[in-house]
Image: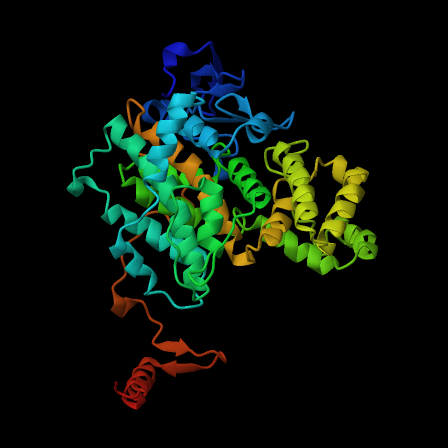
Length: 469
């Protein structure tokens, strides 16, 4: 719930160029961070803050995830991600983010039963997959089919998302069905028949079964590989107000259907600046080629005139090692050792990490390996192709997205997101009738001009020449 101004611990003084002096309430969060409350700044004083990318703006108050970038800590509802990944599982993570607590044994049994009961999707939805090209990107499919779930679970079907119980049900449905839809997207993109979910498998095991199972032969899930995938999903489940999570919240602020909001999150995640980093790491490692080339490539990365960059290093929030990166590195070693995979990219990655973390250029800039540095190698070892990396990311992040949506939808009072802008266009000006605008000639690609009459004639000629269906 958004903090009240009455909770302000003190105030700050803002002096404007016109001489006005404004008092801004100062708020502190549970971690002791300081925030200036500017909610009344525009309504009462017609003054806005300017913060592209929201680097210095808290768009909401949330109790779900906390990042301590200075010390490399990530907490889910107060629990360190290292402990949750080591001692817990996806059911713990899902229940914790969605409902706020680690489940008791009895709660786990009920939650697991309910969660597995929502893996199936309507048969009519499956027909959607037949409309995609055989080479359609799986993320393009995911954006479409996740949004299509809104047609099956909306107010016309008796669902009132103002009710907390209904929102919790949406939390079960979203995550339960995401693995099914993701596996179907994979099968569609590879021209294979879809595989239905199994209730006797946990989330990661079932996901692998639906991805790699075929109706022509039995598929045995490797428990070590499944555990690796489960940890990857847990590490990516939530990460404060990132681009896709903020997108989900902004869409949800208009009271849009939760499945439409999650589809918006999928679309945001698809962007290469957000969800495509681990794939970029693999491309970089392949470009480096051999361990011997690392010094030369590191030198190129330091050269600002060279476009080459070390992918998977540094993070906008973490000023030291990303805590998820350490877990991912250890998991990567264990997985490759278990699968007896001799991946030359792992050797390059290990040596590159060693070189960069002992180089003052990178350490002085706090450029340490992040979670994307090793996750791509894990995905490759699991048999997941590059174009599915972001899809798996979306499956994991769906837990955080719907948890954040539930929290946002339960806020009192609720406000639709409506950022202001700094206008840089023309001031008000008189409309000019077309006859007064001039420009009776049009330039072609070569820079020469032709009259509007000849342009229109050419367009007509083209239309006449086009074959009729």
